[in-house]
Structures are given as structure tokens and as C-alpha cells.
Length: 246
Picture 1 (cartoon, rainbow, N blue to C red):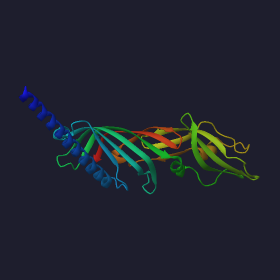
Picture 2 (cartoon, one colour; picture 1 turned 60 degrees about the horizontal axis):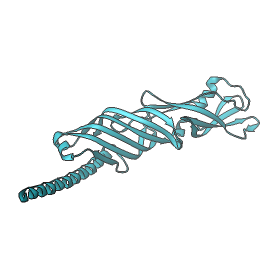
Picture 3 (spheres, rainbow, N blue to C red; picture 1 turned 120 degrees about the horizontal axis):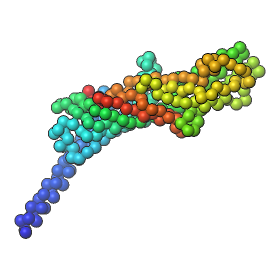
Picture 4 (cartoon, helix red, strand yellow; picture 1 turned 90 degrees about the vertical axis):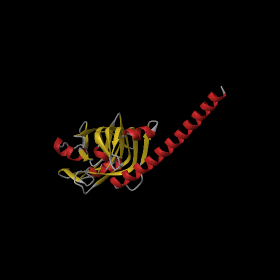
């Protein structure tokens, strides 16, 4: 019995040591992965990287990680032409089946899902923020975006006629969708009246409707769904064979 107790104590001690070593190893790996991701994506701040699953060391031995979660703040994505950038305030991705090379220089995930948030002032950069003539003597300017409720965006349009500016901006309730996996599109549900002036639909939509391309996301992940929220649009992102590092 004494020998058995000693054996059990030794097993518990060795198990505790293994857990400590495993956690030290995973913390080190998370830091290295974060630094490599920062360099690969030219990030201004170090991202959050969390490697899930236990034990970590057996995953390393197998050359594949069960799950890796990544969080990036203030990521600057390209907008299609390469000249303009759009800031994503909070980008988070959950990657599964992450295979890595023997020297850890590359890592590719089988699948990735996540979320991203784009503030309304960032999305507003694409809208017609300069006065645009929609009829003789009538100009319109998009001056703000906000949460319209029920997943809609409220587009505030300032209208000026020959008699002066309307006392209040015209509010246009709009739907927001994802097109082709890389573009956020905003379209008015119903056309407003601009100071009682009847306008052709095509002229009105030159102001109310716009779209913003968002590409160059980390690892090649793409936009999936989008919905208006309190402080901006919440976007669901997805991808397969997503390159995390290298």
C-alpha cells in the first residue's frame, strides 16, 4: 500500500509538472504567433492569439492545432483601389484545423468564422458627402449614418433648395447586404421626398445608395453577412484554407 501511495504521488507530481510545462509552451507559442501575424499583416499593434485545446504539446507533435482564436483591433483593410483604407475596429476570427510547417514558418486553417465591426463614420467615407445636384436648384448631401433598428441603417440626407436648406435632414431607412463576399451595399428601402420636389428614382439613388468594398482581410477571409448595429455595422466573416502565418 505504501508503494502504491508513493506511485500515485509521483504520478500526480509528474502530471502537475506536465500541465505547467504545457501551459508555458502554449503561452510562448501564442506570443510567437502574435508577433509573426503582426509582421505578416503589417499591424500597428500586436494581435491577441489564443490557442485552444489540451494538451498543447501533443497537438504540436501531431503538426495540427484544434482551434486558434485571433483578435485584431483597428485593422486597416483595403477598399479595392488600393489607395483608400477602411478601419475595422474589432476583427475576431475562430480558426479550426490549423496545420503548421515543421519550422513554424507557416500555418493554414481548414476553416475560419468570425466577426468584424465597421463604425458608421468609416462607412460614411464612401457615401456622397459632397453636395450633389439631384434636380435644378436642389442639392443633397449624406451627412450621417446611424442605427435604424431591425438591422437597418438610417441615412441622414441634408437637402438644400432654391429657398434654402430644409430645417431637418431627410432620414432614409436602408437595407445593408454583402455582395460578392467583399462589398457592403447600402440601398434605400423606399425613396424619400426632397422638399416636396418629385425626382426621378435614379437621381435619388445616386445619393441614398452606395457601397463599400472591403478586401485584403487577414488570411483571405471574406465577408459573409452584415447587419446594422448601435455604433456601426456588424459583419460575419468566413473562409477556408485561411493562411494565419506565412
